Image 1 (tube, rainbow, N blue to C red):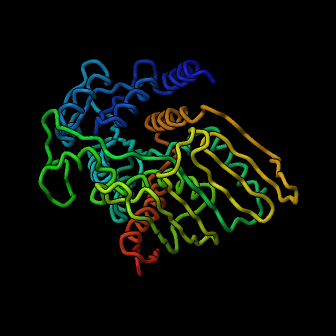
Image 2 (image 1 turned 120 degrees about the vertical axis):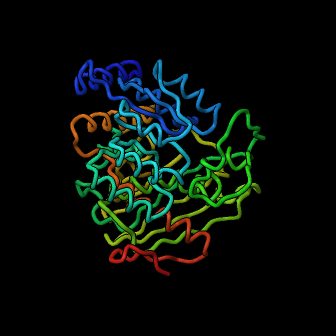
Image 3 (image 1 turned 180 degrees about the vertical axis):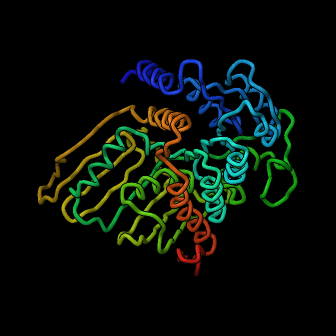
Length: 392
């Protein structure tokens, strides 16, 4: 579908749902690149982004440029949450802030669209669930595949049983990441507020710019990309918490970073299958159509799912296997995010459950947090669902 036509149809849909003169007022918390991108999509769907918060002045000013005319400016997210004119918030900050901001937001009466991964620790994830259910707010985790037309069609395929018994799901995401470029602060930064719950340390512009690659704030691309892929696997396999998680990784090839760009996560699920995710970000670069895949290995067929395609391969002795079903939609993934936001805005109005609720986000979060700990400890970790604790 043409992007302009798609956006027009989605905006009209949003207008019908919310009413032409009843737009949802949204505040942006975290006006970096991702936050500004999401702001554009929210506006395309008819939301009024009337508040922007960031602790780095240049990001704040850039966020205000992207937001709706007359948006209020904040350098402390709690003051934004006090604004009665804000109905919902986007949380697009470093990972270690996702949980507390979401919890504070729902207690302030706001609905939340929170970027993935949902949290940075397992306990944080359970606190988010408790707060969301207690306050009866709408919280959508930003795992946009759950709102993608292609992925929803794929979910029906796997649920049909065409694969038979699936005991192994193998997945990967390959690309290449480069060394960090020099970064110079160009404006006011509230460093202590940015650190939040992370260990205190002296101002470090390199860490601020490349927070993604330090365990205090994130799990790097290992967690960032696995958040998408593991979530999709758990969704397709009707799976919840793991039994065991093991993560192994190579030495980071970029000496300034802590998180390796080449690593593998393996988990055992109580639904009687093993999941494997491999991150290879020192590989060659791929087109987005070819950069990732999930293989559901059944005893009757294999179901392959890419970013913008899926295929079913029945058991065959042929040298060249041919799919019995396929769905190819090059260029379609750019619409997944806006569909996910549309679902969120619809749920803000209807109070129905969104496509990516906090419980689903926590199932993925447990695997990711255990993977980070397994990688750093060098051993397999077990999940005790009765006590909600990790065990050796």
